Structures are given as C-alpha cells and as structure tokens.
Length: 121
Image (tube, rainbow, N blue to C red; front, side):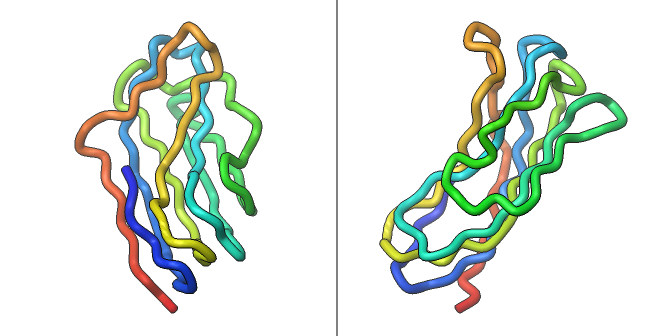
C-alpha cells in the first residue's frame, strides 16, 4: 500500500491493513517509509491479544517504532492501523511497512487492505 507525495506538500494518511500471522506467538511491527520529510507525525495500532492492542504514539521517523510486539490476536483477521501527517521535502512514494517479530514466522498483509490520504497543505 502506497501513494505518491510531492515535495513541499503536507498529507494526512490512514493505512488500514488486514494481516495474518503464522502463529499467535508471532508479533509484528508496522510503520511507513518514504522520501525525505521535513516532519512526520504518526501513530500505529495493531492487535496484541483478542482484547488488547499495541499502540505507539509520537512516531517521527521512517521505520519507527523500532520495537516489535510479542504476539498477534489470531492467525487470521488481525488489523493494523497507521495514521498521521507527512510533510514531504522530496517527491516520491509513501509506503506502509511491516516486519515479523520472528525471522522464520510470517506476517502477511492481505489483499483488500486500504490506504486513505489527502493533501492538506
């Protein structure tokens, strides 16, 4: 999931990503990557158990947060949300990124996930 950004523009974005985990004991990390930015502020939220989630507020760099949660609520039907503002200082593509907590245990973003975005300045 991604969208094009233009240098000098400010964007609001919201990625809503359905994902699967190879096991409930496999955690994940969710973030963004893109071209240069004079500022970015975003939060991530993803499942931890069936009644809790991992929320990271105040992310201000590509590939933040650096920490990975320790589990997934289920092997299927998990949801991750990445939302915030991006002040592009270079043109390019803003992309959702994720990583598995365990190198040999997959986290898979599923087709049908969406990104909403709007140029705000």
